Length: 107
Image 1: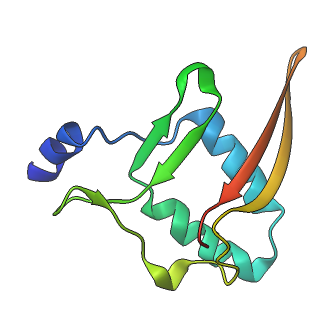
Image 2 (image 1 turned 30 degrees about the horizontal axis):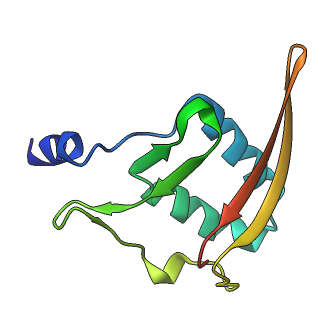
């Protein structure tokens, strides 16, 4: 019950269907050794921050004890650049195309 209340207080959100589709598309194109890290990172996401008009989604793990972002360093990718372009994804829905860049921050 307390975690449910904290999720409301901290404004935590879940990954929506389009975000999940994009993340799964990226996963399908990773090397097998990278998918374990990818899966662990996706599993840890418990907050999604979205900019208006769907131009950007930012994924976090919020520590519910302290209400601040934290991240398990053991599941970071070896390349820990501050900003790494991980993938470009192009999806087509009927007559519309969506071009997406997936960035990884600090691994």
